[in-house]
Length: 576
Ligand code: ASP
Image (cartoon, rainbow, N blue to C red; front, side, top):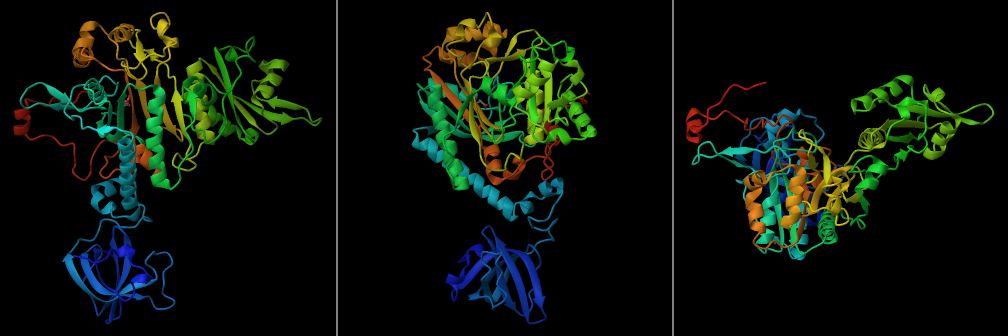
C-alpha cells in the first residue's frame, strides 16, 4: 500500500513519487487552494501539501501520494527529521475515518493516567511510547542473542502450573474439569527450570511472563517479564558471567555504549556502607559506623547494638522545621528517633557540634563523632541507634531521599551483590524464613552452622542491581537431598508439607539432579531505566493501573452466572 515510511523521507529522495500511509497528526488550510497535512506513522511525521481542500480530520487514516520536494526557502523545520522536504501535489485517499481522539497524540500533553490507559491504542501512537516499545524489543532480542550465543536453549514452560514456594501471593485459575481445584499462574518458572536441569537441558533460558498478585507500584505490575536462566555444572561465577554478558549486550544495544565490567560487593558490605542490599552507587554519602565511638556512652539513646550516621554536605543550614520533618521521616521508617548534629566553628576557629543532644555526649564522643564521620564545618550529621538491620534500613532510606537521583538518570551503575544471608527473620512460629527460596544452596563455609546458628549462614544467592533498582536475583540451588532435608527442617517444613508442596521437584531430584544454578533479570525494569522512565508502565504495552484495573477492557469483571457454574464457583460477599 505504500512506497515509503513517513519519517524516513529526506532531501536525497527529492524528485521521487512516494505513497505514505498513516494518521493525520495535523491539518491546516491555506485558503481554498492549499491544504497541509502532517502525516504520522511509527517512523515519524512528514508534511504533505494538497491542492484544494481536503476532508480529513485528526487521526483519520489516509494514504497520500505525491512528489518529494525540498521545502521552499525559509520554511524548513529543523526540529523534524523530515523537515527539509515535503510531499507535493498530493492525492489523499481516506482509508478510514476516526472520531476525535480523547487527547492529542503529543508527548508534550500531560494526560490523566486512567484516560491514557482507557485509550491505550491512541496513547501508544505517541512518539515516546512507540520508541519505548521499540527499545523493549531491541533489549529483548539482544538478551536472546546473548543467551543463544552462550549455548542456552529457549524452552517455554507452562502458565497453568502449581504453586511455587517463592513467597509472593499467586493468582489462581479455577479448573472447569476439576471442580474446586485451581491451577496457579507461575510467579516465576523456578521449579520448571530446575526440572529442565534434571531433564538434561543443561542451559535453559526463557523470556518468561511471571505473575504475582501483589500490590502495584512504580516498579511492579501483576505480570512482568524476565529473562529467566538456569544452567547445570556451573558455579556462581559462571552465572554472574552469563548474565553480565547478556545485560551488558542489552545495555550496548539500548544506549550505544557498553558499560565496563560489573563490580561485585558482598551483601554485608552493601549493608554496612549503603544500608541496603540494592545500593545506588552513583553517589557516596555512605553510612559511617559509630558503634565503637559510643561503646561506653552514658547517653541512653545511643547505647544500642548499632550506631551509624550519614553526613549531609553543607546541611548545617537546614531549618528546624526541615530537621523535624527528617526526624518524623526516620520514625516513620521505624527508628525511635533521629539525632542531628550541625558541625560548627566558634570565633576562635575551634570546630564543635550543635545539637539538642550534644550536652549528653562526652567531649571524646563529640570529637570522635566528627572525626569518624569526616564531617567538616557546615555539614550535618544524622545518626540512628538501634539494632543493625533497622539502623541500616533507616539511614539507607534517608541517604537515598537526601542524596539520590531518579533511577533512570545516567550514569548506569551496575553492581553484583553476593553472599546474601540464607535466612531473613523468623515466621510466626519462630522458624527462620528463607531469604531467597528454600532451594538456595548455603555458602560452603557456613553450611556447618545451618542448625546451630542459622542467622549467620550466608547463601550462594546473588542480586544484580542497577542505580538502586534490583534488576534480578538468582542462586546456586540445592541439588542434594541431604542438604535440602536439613534446610526444610531449619525452615520448619515437615516432610509431609515438603512432599505435598513440592514433592514433584524433590521426587525428580532422586532421578539424577545435576548441580545447577540460575538467575532472572527483570526486563521491564531494565527497559524502563534505558528508556529514562521511572515507571515500568511506560514500557509495557497494556499495563494495569495502581489498583490492578485495566480501564480499557474493564478487567477484572464479574463472571456471568453460567461461566461461574461451569467452574463450580459461587461468589461470596467480600469480607473486610
Ligand atoms: N526465580 C527467581 C526469581 O524469579 C530467580 C532465580 O532464582 O532464578 O526471582
